[in-house]
Amino acid sequence: MKSNTSFKKNAPKDLKIIDRQDELYHYARVISNTRFGKMPMYIAYCKKVSHVQYCINYCREHTFPFRVRSGGHQHEGMCSANDVIIIDLSEINIITPVDDDTAWIPAGKQLGQVYSELEEDFKTIPGGGCQSVNVGGLTQGGGWGTSVRKFGLTCDSVTAIEMVLANGKCITATKKNKYADLFWAVRGGGGGNFGVVIRFKFKLVSILPVVTTFRLEWKKPEKFKPIITKWAKLHATKNGIVDTLSATCTMTVVAASESEPNTSEIHGRMAGKFYGTEEKLKKLLRNYFGKKFLENTDEQQFTEVTEKTLREARKNREALGKKKSLKGKIKKSAPIYSYTEIIRMLSDYINPTFTMAPSFEMPLSGKEDTVLAKVLPSKELDTSEESSTISSETCANRNLTIVPDRGPSSTCDQPHPHKVSSSFPKDDVNHKDLVESIYTYLKNTRYQSDVNMYMSFHCMGGAVTRNAGENAFGYAHKPYMLQIQAWWDDVSNAFTNQCRNIEYLKWVKKFRKSIKTHTEGAFINFVDKTLVADIEDDQNRLKLLEIYYTKKNLKKLRKIKSKRDADQLFNFEMSILPSEKKKK
Image 1: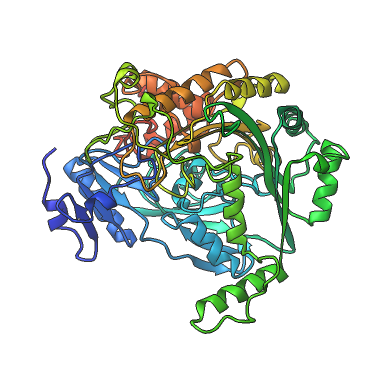
Image 2: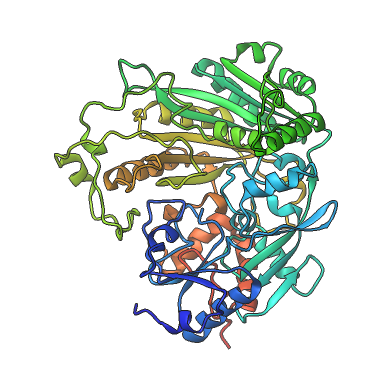
């Protein structure tokens, strides 16, 4: 597509626009999943509503394609594309308090910044753990986090939505006004379907009087398989686990021994958040899982967050912020962490990295492995699976020099090539069989030091179930969801490796297939667009969308699309299609 210079020429003078000639272009175009090397025409950093309106009106009037980017964490890279205008919202990032318990939070605000700022008043929102994720994508997809059983999905705390529609008009949608259909659809319907969300009005939740986070690990399958099975069954029981406790379990691939670095063993973890004291939490865990439950762990950690610890953490931050001697101003005993730091550490534990998963330090060099050979693409190459120019056979047979790699030292909080996929247990699932199937697949996975591979079991129920039908999330009745994850390459690697892309994408696809008799559906925040082939065909796209939204909710979403964006100005690979017009 030829560059249309009128977009930049006629733009408001205070709207920052990056084009391909700008020295910051290759930095500005990067999104979280570096498997995708999209080359947009322009990146417009909007600072206010009028900037967004200019972009939308321009794209509509000139039939110019665009994508909306809050933080760039769309797992399939659909917040960007070649030859489009990126409407970037990251500079609309000021929280506006309404009262002590309510605030407007912009879509472009990073979650970690939200936690940090709200923590000053001992408040938070029930968001996720990945702190570089922005509020817009998280909330529009629904938003899972470790307060989910007590407060529901992130979108359940939203009371109003300010957004720019396809006609360029800025409106506010609430449950009871004339935009109530959008209020329902945007909360769980996924981003970029109905308009550009500017900000959400959130009902804030209190961190006080006490919150306890916990982290538990088991290194032997005979220990963790029965625990994860019991965890799954308890969540499937109506009066199983209290709503004040939200937890996730993980099975992760680690190296069995230093002498056999490609031999795998599987470790199990449980981690989460409890609205109550450490003492009460330990009592609950023993009641649920047995009297010797905690004694049988290989590692454990509990952290209480109270007003006292939060004030101590604030005092430490203030002391560190002053360029004076810190002697005597910071406690030398056990470190006191802020709520934001504790949630970040909890997320790092739930999403294991190479620094935590192996039981020993992996060497920087190793035996040649042609599958792991590094291939350096050009800056303009898109390394997604559908555009990769290197076949599996080529990777297996090409004699290339190995460049040693480490797996990511973080996952979602740094740009990395990755692939995720999600599903829910079928209503009649045998939880023991599902856990065994997951363990078997992971056990047969060869450990490789450049990648983090694991399955996460995310709890649901509680407030999620009580809010069923209030938003566009179609699986509120499910006890938990499953997320397959593979993250490779550390952030220091300038380019990803196409051979590893193929290898790890195949691993995720086969993993999902191995448990398909036990699972169904998918979660739009953990999106995988490859579940149905050839989604450029409308009928195939509808099959894919039905997997994510359910047949009932997709029908409703399509009607809303027809009413609010019948001409499909908001259009991307997985955007919702309007309802078909009835034949006269």
